[in-house]
Amino acid sequence: MTDTAPPPFLFHQGTAPLLISMPHVGTYVPPALAARFTDEARQVHDTDWHLERLYGFAKDLGASILVATHSRYVVDLNRPPDGASLYPGQSVTGLCPVDTFDDTPIYAAGDVPGDAEVAARRDAVWAPYHAQLRAELDRIHAALPRRLLNDFFRRVVIIIKVYGNGTVTFLSKLQPVRMMVNDKDLFSP
Image (cartoon, rainbow, N blue to C red; front, side, top):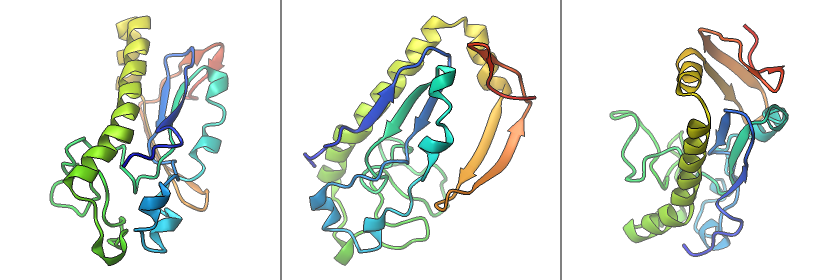
């Protein structure tokens, strides 16, 4: 895969100790690859729609934001580079998925990517995204007292699910903490 236009990600460097990564909002599929997809797969249904709108407030809080541009059907940025299963024994998608979460084939006529194509996609899209993710985490970590960063990630867990139609379900919030950034409350206890 040599076509990576647009770039693999968009990045906004913030000023606060907060990084928001959106690995599944991308919808771009290179035309040659889209031609191999089923009609349904070309609709890129397994996209985290509307997250950029949901987190529209984050720039005002000083957050850094990393946004994928390519569809998870090109390469799933939330998978290890070797494609190992995150949930052994469960039905999951790989680094370069060949089916959707409901086991619907992505490729027409079984025209799935081989090892060389998976490696090319990993190098063109996955690696730059994760290099930027690592660089920004390192920058934030170096700029902050270690205790603050560790305290933030140890004490706050927020899990939400955003559905394709834009509805949001709040799944959990554990041990709420109040954290101020630029005189704005990031979380309400």
